[in-house]
Image 1 (cartoon, rainbow, N blue to C red):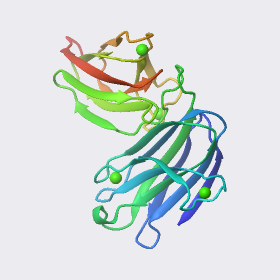
Image 2: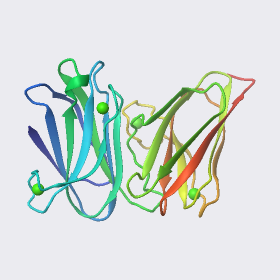
Image 3: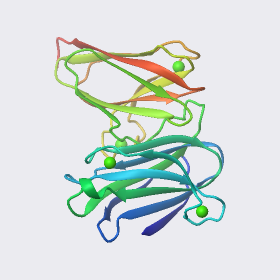
Length: 247
Ligand SMILES: [Ca+2]
Ligand SMILES: [Ca+2]
Ligand SMILES: [Ca+2]
Ligand SMILES: [Ca+2]
């Protein structure tokens, strides 16, 4: 087991690409600190085809060493080579993100990209700036509605979708019990990080008012994020598909 100490992590994502796991070295551990109450964002992306990796987050018991006394606080164990994602509000301290090769789903050496950031909770900058394909909607060709929830143990949900030529979409977040917000992103450099200039639109209305992003009418690949602003809430997210007279 290899342990990589990333030091104190803040808003800027720390990225470790092209790491590998195999039968003789099946886990990697990324140790990091946060210096206040933050939304910890973790993503494992670009898992090799035909393989499966899992993601676990532990809080250190205070000795600064990854051991059996550390508490598992969250995990992401999706099938095949789907991206893994954790977005969790936590207090200052030392944490360990463990990436494990899932042997029954893996044929050989598993490669993956890892990223971590810590954003400011309960604010308009609390959105995760990582872009795992947590919910893949694919190319929109009709209206789509999804329900989900955000809260302290899942502070951001990230949806992937694309629009073809002559297609557009209006996006509405509603049925809220607490304040959640949305933003729309295009990952122009395809690094699975939200860089400057890649946020296309956002809606951050207060309370349980619906959030709306209207008239997105350019073809391309998009990410839509739903963020907890305060409290825990379920939500309904609607993609109202329309056609346009232009490409
Ligand atoms: Ca420990
Ligand atoms: Ca997995
Ligand atoms: Ca980017
Ligand atoms: Ca809102």
